[in-house]
Image (cartoon, rainbow, N blue to C red; front, side, top):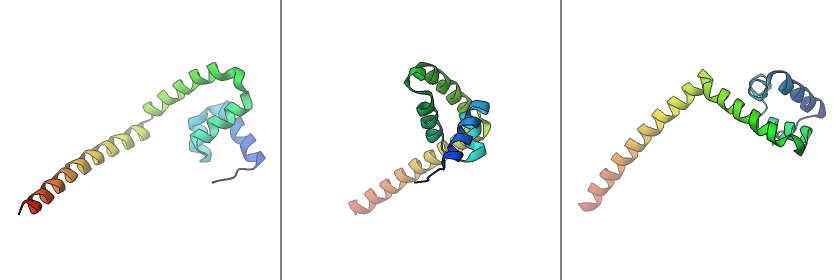
Length: 99
């Protein structure tokens, strides 16, 4: 588990306010979940509704990000290939067991 100093946390929260969670994550390498938690802790529970709306917008930004979209496409292709290979292995195993 990574430990961040108080100064790192404050700097990250300042960047989140300036450029948003996704860009802060890309810039500083701090996980998106950690940034959301820090922001929620800093804002308090009164801002929960506004935060949820902002999270939806940032999630959409993730989906619109070409780099992430390309990674998702590659992973989906890899997953399909693995499923096909798994099916072939199961068929081969069944044929060996039948003999």
